[in-house]
Length: 185
Ligand SMILES: [Zn+2]
Image 1 (tube, rainbow, N blue to C red):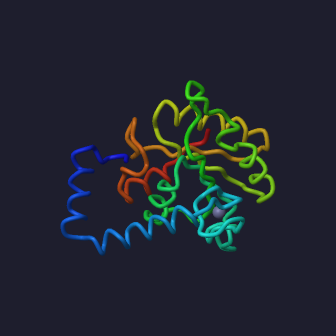
Image 2: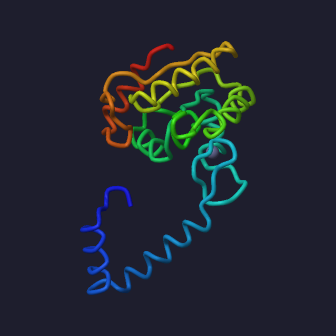
């Protein structure tokens, strides 16, 4: 598990066995329910609780009316941006970044779905909020070129997010600033 090494894992296992069997069992149930039922929203590819159903953000008419689309790498980036309350448009979740050496290309990130969505939803601005890492920058450039073909404004989040940093590790205020000071691409 990310962030949990063998020592912590052993400690958690013994803690549940020794003192928290009830809680452990309800945790198992919650994980099992989530793993069985959580699906991907067919439009933005964020997690949603029902197969083939749009998520609440894609359903919201207020969100759609903003005509702004924010592209992020992970579902937790959506949570981080939502917590900063600095964006009122819709999202597209890539579930990764371009990484040819690992076999991750435009098809694996479903960039054709992003292309279709931009046209279908009559998006007026695409904000690229991928991480400020080499892969995140390469991914942003690739998508920027794709979006520009449709004569749509493309911006990239700027100051505040540290180089090499991931969005999930940034506090809400910093993230709000970086969205406000986004730049044209
Ligand atoms: Zn959605």
